[in-house]
Length: 192
Image 1 (cartoon, one colour):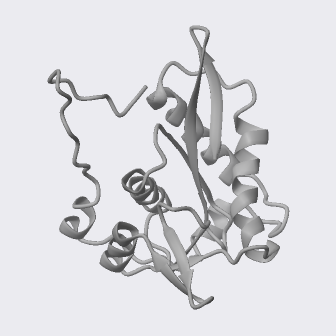
Image 2 (cartoon, rainbow, N blue to C red; image 1 turned 180 degrees about the vertical axis):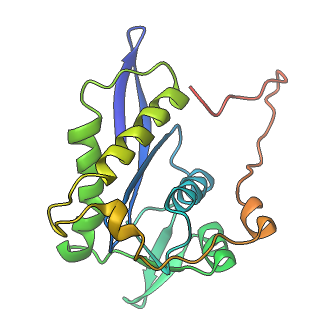
Image 3 (cartoon, helix red, strand yellow; image 1 turned 90 degrees about the horizontal axis):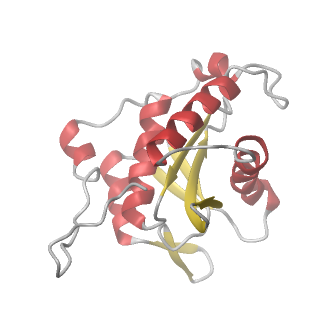
């Protein structure tokens, strides 16, 4: 989701990535400057690290950084970089069906929770500060009783089947990003 804020009289935006585990309802949120495929992958990696392991399946929205098109009405054509990442870590990717609230609602609601419960009135100095606050908010939210399950996500999280994070070589090759130096010899900062 897109999140707007004002700094020194200038309107700016950051993107929020959120992940929710299906069984425990554990939540994770991170804010980033871009919504491209490498940034999405690093956000997903951060979520897996926060959750302490890999899920078996990842259900995603129909965004171009993940999903390109549906061939023959059923078979998804994935973004090749995203598909490579998912195959490397051994996680099955699924995409929400259009106009299907049973799946689409789960993805959209997660951003709505951040927009309504965390974002209003938040004050931050930079992206790192914003992400520290988001992490503390997630920690507190994950300790509260969840309405659907009537249990705390941190308690149910123990029962949730997760696989260990992959070996460093399989993981770290997606943690870096190739960047180009501008004509002036400067490299843009990935943070605010």
